[in-house]
Image 1 (tube, one colour):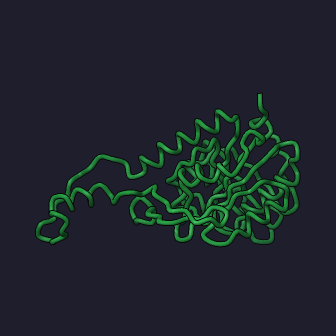
Image 2 (image 1 turned 60 degrees about the vertical axis):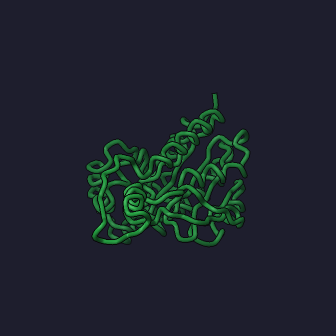
Image 3 (image 1 turned 60 degrees about the horizontal axis):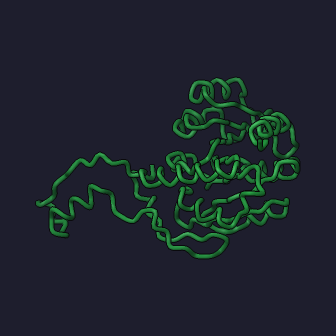
Length: 263
């Protein structure tokens, strides 16, 4: 995952097209820093020392996520972190929500490696939307969200939807300060997705099975999929929907409404 492979080192992102230097990873892995100190900045193999440092690589992100969470709670905004593999229908689902739920004031933050296509699409559906272009990064981070929300009026929102980068691996490691982690599973992806990507599903509060209108056509085994989800994510509420036709969406809306009504 990102904490191991180094893809969490992000030099530059863009928010709504404006380039921003990203400093959420200001230092190397602590083991590397310690090793350089001991070798006077050199990396000669025979001088290498390995020191165990009991410090989570994601500690800084977690601290920033808690700061985000406190801010969202102060603003009384429900925050959804929507995750899935590419093509599962995240944007279609959010677009449908925006068009169907006029009584819920929603804003959107969209994460993509390139283009602002999805943000423009969601703005046309009537929502304020901010695009984060991550370039080489395969996930969003808490610091990116903190920067993006400056472009939104949270006082006039009930729900903030974060559409994460399409990926079932790296985003699972990053808390953004959300209230709900919502994972989409498309019927076209196969029933065993929860077994292949356990961390993502184990950390979800909600799993939405999307594109059920074509489940029979693609040979989707519903019973097997539900069994795998219950095995890997027993804590998650499951909704079966079609963002294209609207099938099953009312149950999801009712659940969302029950959480997002401001007191």
